Amino acid sequence: MADQRIIHSVIFSLIHEAGSKEQQTFLEDGRSILSSIPTVQQFKVLNQVSSKNDYQFGFSMLFEDEQAYAAYNEHPLHVSFVSERWEKEVSKFFEIDYTEYH
Image (cartoon, rainbow, N blue to C red):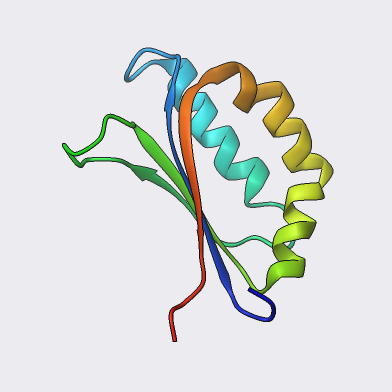
């Protein structure tokens, strides 16, 4: 993965009731906090609509390379979001990282 752009995606479900203020706050906070990390590009909050799985939402973002992705993972905003919000409010998730196939 060295020197290749990385698309980081995570699909997840929340413990909050669908349409609740808590659900909306989590998604908005995720967008504002995680997209403010300097190495994050093209951050998106996604609404999962496939009937092939029962996850609710997705976060997707782009990193210029492996070093940018590592900087994101270690960034204090990411670390605190995971420990203070993600671990408490996400009921299940699936994570995948892509590089472009050549």
